[in-house]
Length: 149
Picture (cartoon, rainbow, N blue to C red):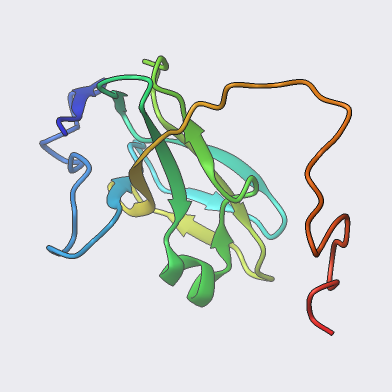
């Protein structure tokens, strides 16, 4: 699968890296902050951090999913407020990463810092059928904790 990546800033490829796989076994490409100056995120604050890139997914059979970097979440309390960002196949704008600071300390994002990861995954588009009945299952409508007994 080919993913087209468009630089929206002259810094991309020069001062700020294009998205890249850190290792051969990486599922996600690292996304870097395309900012001019350091950005401090206070505890409880949410910010949108530009990446300076747009992507062209090859078809509606793919989606881009933006995930937090696990090291930032565990070590610094920097995560995504929406858990996972969704990049639809027809979106061509700049990828912005929503960041939140769930720690008790300020965190400063530096220009070019890896802030998230982008995973490309296949999409199964459902054919919706409206119904008044659903098939019975053993679990039924049991929710939170219902299978842990």
